[in-house]
Image (tube, rainbow, N blue to C red):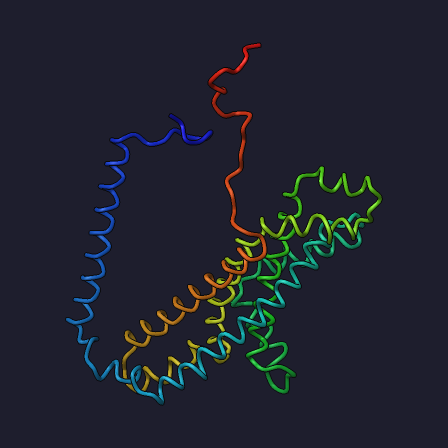
Amino acid sequence: MSSSVLFDAPGPKTVARHRIYTVVSVVVLVAMVAYAIWALYDAGQLEYELWEPFVTPDYIEYILVDGLLQTLKMAFFSIIFAVVFGLVFGVAKLSDHGWVRWPAWLVVEFFRAVPVLLLMVFTFFLLAIGNGPLTSFWCVVIALTLYNGSVLAEVFRAGINAVPRGQAEAAYAIGMRKSQVMTSVLLPQAVKIMLPAIISQMVVALKDTSLGYYILAPGLTAVAKPIYLEFGNQVPTAIVITGIYVAVNLVLTWIATIVQKRLVGEKKVLDVPMVGPAPSGNATAL
């Protein structure tokens, strides 16, 4: 029997085949990890001297305070400002006034098209070089805000447009103004649609803080260089820094998912009864 209106439930042969694929994939993955560990051992990269900085309290404090904390601060400000930027320009792109809609479209499309690293470099040379008013820290924040805010502007616009048109029409029919329709009807319903994309963009912003290394910004990538220059342990340092990024991104995703469940609840499968199986039992034939 079909378990979905889109596809049939897999049969016994398909289930068995999928299990074989899963086992083979796990074996291949374990083999790859084992080979990587053996290669590191054979190259002498598992020697204690190379990993000693990461169990030394002074270096741990250096990585966490001067590296991780600065990275989290840059990501925090970037995400907050990007959400505000995206909301303002996403709504502006939906404006009925051309003098509002077209400049917003131009700004969003321009900053979506420029690579993040180039944005950081332009901002750094414009606002930080010489006697510029900002530091490289804020140059990273501005660049990430402009890029991620432009992406989120499209997310907000698409999320609002995804709300059924009848919702807005019903609100207009009872005399609500467009601003009231947007804030009271469309945005609350669009949040559930937009949250997964917003969470994904938060992770992107956190990872892109690593590009600040190019303009001498603080962060995890910045603290890695002094360590591997002193100990000659490029590979262990890269593994540890990468592990920290992965762990922080997992925690960020976990927190964002909890917030999503608290705000909009669990997502449920769309129920489409009109295309389901015909009623059984004592249904009266027409």
